[in-house]
Image (cartoon, rainbow, N blue to C red; front, top):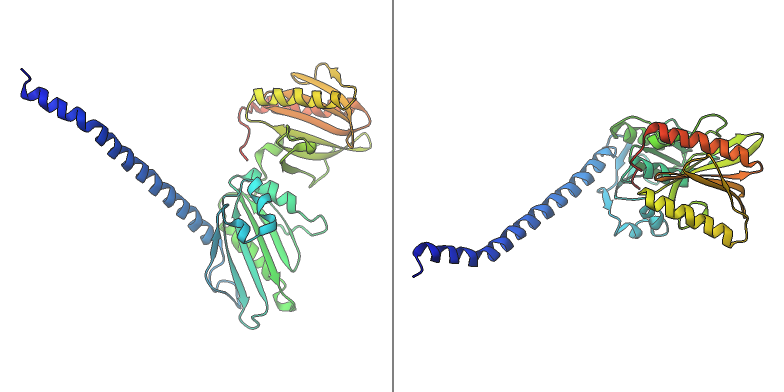
Length: 329
């Protein structure tokens, strides 16, 4: 005959699914609240980077600050939103400021959290105007009397101005320095750029590309730097992959693509795990070499040996660094 203890256990087992559902719901709610709090905290920290309401002498904030997430960014910068999102955009906080003596003059300060220093660097280099002077703000900067642009850490900052009077021409840079001073950390460039050798490099030529290195979707993202070697301008690319399997598959795809285009693909020995040299339309001669999660491509070559030497230097830096992690986008 069933005992009272047996009945209690039977009731408990009947309740277990309901208790599990209750605990699951509580856990989901806690995670949701944490995510919302984290998001608000990130937005709050961005807002704290903006100049205060009356902090710029002779200027004041016009209205409340504003914020945008990836889902809504197109409502603010419709034509440019896709590019920011491709580079890993997380959120934006900004505000407008006007001159108290002449409210026709104003500036807009936008701080973009790009998620990583590499993404902020990539966004900056994609916007960089070679004709504009460096400003000495953040890791890198450029601008003039009507705009200031810089990045520091994972933040990319744009300041646009509507200024005609001489007395206000320094305001965009003043605001930029205020924001830069509030972003924590130093002014160093992304660490991965250190894989490029210094000899023969063209200063300021580094960039970070997403969406297809050399126009190939199977080379999804990478960093590049120009060099002058043996009296010619060439370019070195370090293509980044999440793992060695993906890198190896892309290397084979590149080989297949060039062979299918009718180019002679020549295997080369002693450069990385495997490598080849070939001609590619618009790139002159190229050298491609594989090592772990990285593929190194040197383009614009008249002399393949020059490309192999540069590729070897980069591969040596990768090996010496012991890099097992590829930076996230």
